[in-house]
Structure formats: structure tokens, C-alpha cells
Length: 402
Image (cartoon, rainbow, N blue to C red; front, side):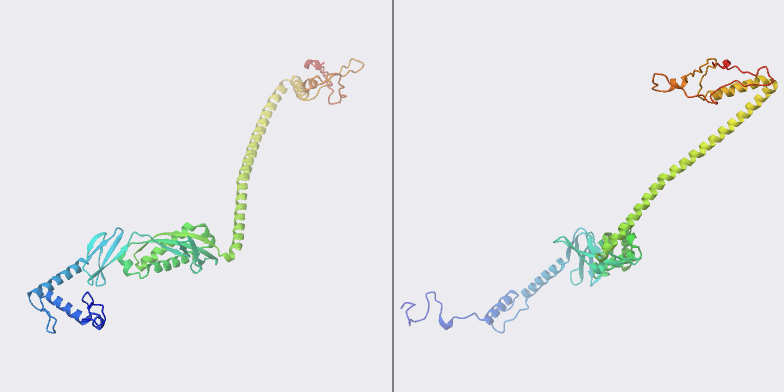
């Protein structure tokens, strides 16, 4: 009968597999028993699945246990190798206590749990931000007022921001003395900045940012050295310093007034620097002129005195000649500086002669008759009359006067 005919004998399919209720999942107990038998055979135990089967204690079993022990110990020892990268330091801890500090390269230590290794990067520069936080994804900054607002010595409020960069200079101190380096440095930096700003005036903070940064760096390094944090502060830079937004308008007015004050002072100083040297130069010139005039007057007076003495001596020797000479010299001096008009007294019509010296010296003289001004007593020259002397009349013709 074919296998698919109902009621066929054997109830088997063509592949010899039983169907119906005889097919089911494998027996779990049987699988465990078979595994025990295989392991027992590996380590020299008795084969068989009965309850009497157990691991043997023969020679083959001892060799297997020894091999496993050797493999386990080898893997444990190999786990002690570690690599310290360039710029790092490896701190070896033996039961939690510092044992040694290793340099870069392939190193080995007693495996766990005897010794462990903590690696610290001593060349990486770590940034700390005070008063603001930067978002690297968006490139924006967020203010942190509780860190940036500070009080100055002159009781002004300032909004200030700092950026700090630090390195690890002692790996063991960094690991054992500081639990949270970032929080520690941030709090120490904020404390140092508040101390420096608190003992400085507002104008000094605005005008001496580099000095404030240098003082903050020195104080922060002193604080961290006191903590034995193993940290070196590389730079402390003041990012910004400004008054709070609420008082910025009033502060700008005050700054403008201060700038106007400085400008006026500079202009006044420039004017003083210009006028004072001029005044000093004028005073010095007047003093020199006065000294020169003084020397000239004294020299002229002394010369006149000597001349008078010489004339007096000559007058004693020849009074008449000396008197005539003095008169001629005086008239020469007077007439050389006055306008002269010549009159012909013999002519009955009193014809006036023109002042030729003035006409010649005058530029752009027009041709034609020119009416001369009438003579005056000062312009008329007459010979002096001397009583009791044969030379009472002086002839002007001796001087070339017609």
C-alpha cells in the first residue's frame, strides 16, 4: 500500500520519519548527559551516561588540568601589557596606591587585581570658560550672569568674561588630589578674578586688561599650587569687559563725558605748549633788546661825554672858531632833515623856487607848473646877528646856499 493511503500500515512517510504524536522537541536532560559524557572522556573519565559516570583522576586528567592552568596564567600575565601614547603618562597603582609613573611606550605591570594603570595626557590643553559658554555646533555663546557679574572697588558692577587654558604638570597629583579638575579650576578662577576685580577701580579694569589677566593668572596658579592639584595655568585671557546691559546707556554717557574732558585737557595742554614758548621767546627778545638799548645808550652817552670834553678843551683854546664850527655842524644836521625852499630876495616879485629834491625823489611826478607852499618862519634861513663882533653876519654862500 502506498504511504499516503489512509489506514496504511506503519504510518510512515517516504523518508522513514514517524508522524503524529511520536514527533516532539529533543529531551534537555539527554543533551546535558551527553555533554557530560564527552567532557569526561576528554579528561579521562568513564564513558557512559549512567549515574555512575564521573571525572577520572588518572594521568590524562591531570595533564588536561595543567594545560588549562597554564593557559589561564599566561592570559593573565599577558593582560599586564599596556601602551602609553606619546604625550601621556601612565600612573601604576598597586592595590590603589601609586607605585610608579611610566613614560610613553610599551609597558608591563602586574595584572589586575594586583596593579592597575591610569593614563593621563600631560600635553593636551584644556579650556575653561568663565562667564559664558560656547556652543561649538552653532558657534554661539551663552551668557552666565552668576559668573560674569562682579563688583569693583569703587562699588560699580562689571560684566566680565575670562578664558583659561591649563595643562597637567604632575599626573599623580592630578589623579589623587583633585576629584573634579574642571569644577575645581572653574571655582578657583572665579575666586581669583573676583579678588583682582574687587580691589581695582572700574576705569582701571577697562584700561588695563592685560594687567588684570596677568594678576589673575598669578593668583590662580598660587591657589592651585596650594591645593597640590598638579595643574599648570597656561593662559588667562579677558574676553570682554563691559557694564551690565541695564546701565549701559548711562555708562556710555559717562564715558563720553570723560573722553570730552580728556580731549579738552589735551587741547589746553597743546595751547599751553604753543603759547608758553612764544611768550618766553618774546620775553627773552625784549630782554635782549633792552640790554642792547642799554648798552647803546651808555656807549652813546659816554661818547658824547668824551666828545664834549674834547670840544670844551678846543673851545678854551679857540672860542670863536669852535663856536662857528658848532653852529655849522648844528645847521647841517637840521637842514639835512628838512624841506628847503630857496627865495631870491633881490627880485622884487618874490619868485618862489620849487623844492627840487622833493620833486626828483617823488615817483610819477607830473609835468607842469607846481605851486609851492608859502614859506614859514622855520623854513626861512637868515644869518645870525652877533653884537660886538666883526663876524656878526654869516654868509650862507659858504655852505653853497644861493
